[in-house]
Image (tube, rainbow, N blue to C red; front, side, top):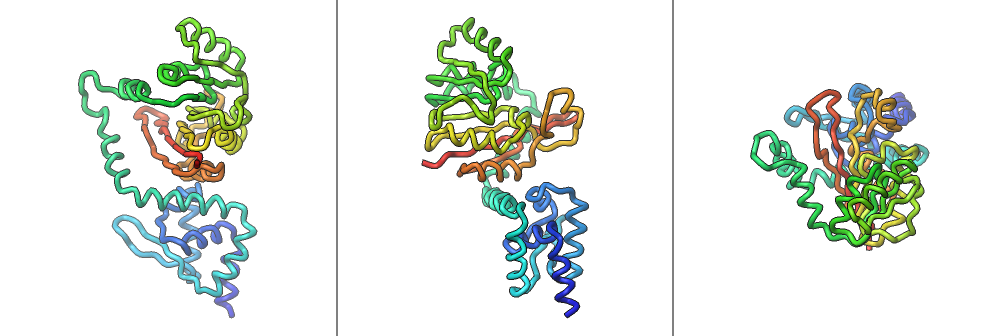
Length: 306
């Protein structure tokens, strides 16, 4: 009886319950649980220790990591599943877990991450990320593109080289005015600037082939609404590209850059994209700055199904 009561007491904590529900589906390391739950290592390790001492979890050494698994019996898991229905974070946890498992299967990703880590470390005349990005932009072939949170519209004007129409949306009247004047000066008749919020962009549903949120999502009051809106204005088969910051602790960014959010964890972004309705979701840390505060750039891609 005491063992059952102890187990029920352990399950009464929402964080331990969330962890147990994840381990019931997949054996995970502390680092993987951090990515899914968006929590600190010490907090997760403490909860795992309690689950382990209560006989609900077990661990096994794998290289440098401990891999944790669920050890609870089926009767207790029935109770856990009933309790989990009352924890609102469970749905997001499951989405983040699915994303993590997709990443595990992507063996090619590790290879390309290694290549990305070497790019730029050795000097090669004429080779740079800027040159590579501009060359790739020139072969893109999207008909209608939106740069959401466009600022002065540098990206929008680069995209205008190939797209039939580029819609640049920004909340600042001065930015919109400046960008429109710059496009006019450069003879870019296919760029249209619109004043609006990325959470409610002034674009008709199903109008876009491609939407881009480049360092804009962390300025949104409600990031999920911005992703929901992007899904709404894309055509079936359309794509969303998100470039933002990996979650960080540089609090000064709120004042220096008017940031609303201090970046996003990779799993959190994937979870939000899935919740918005996107499929074919991919995320990767695309760049790591070497100078303090050492910001990292997170790339996320999602597709609106046909």
